[in-house]
Length: 236
Picture 1 (spheres, one colour):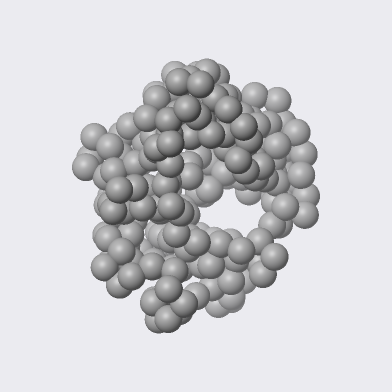
Picture 2 (cartoon, rainbow, N blue to C red):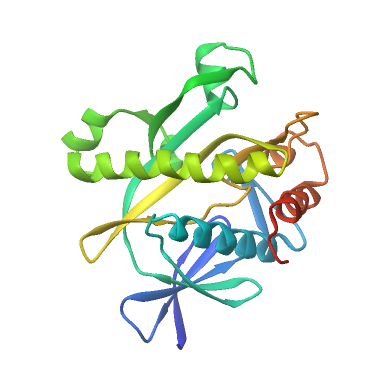
């Protein structure tokens, strides 16, 4: 597989075309951003850790029957993926109150949500990824009701599969965001699943081991990511 020209330069990943029209190469960089890209820093090992973490998680989800973009690892910081027509909607599942939910509703951080909540956000940094609902998705043509229903079903299946994986490792899966796209007419999980896009706390101490360490200036960001990886068995 030949990597060709850069197609897209995101906040933390670069996307490259290949000699196969159905495949792309994702390059995980060491760039770390927060607050819709307003703060960016370089963190050693970050690209490698997130790439291998994502590969591990995507293969777990594939084994559970959730179709993903992942094809195979190419290098420490590169992965071959299917080329999806991305849907500009982020699906967020929350098991505990944290982040924007706390700010929006004034609830206490860390309270358990029963049942887990499902939220939608428009993927648009310039607008601050605004909160939207299913009617918006349909009215603006971002996805069909059938596609949205599949995205929601997959999101809760991901929660079921990964909730147990992290719980067995002594971790709380607080919340996470997912992005989906279409590949040959099928809804497929895309982008990445790493500590950049979820919240993970130690069950006993509630120590934060995710990107909030960067957002909140807690330090040892990549060390936190590596601790999670070690606990769930990611080969780094």
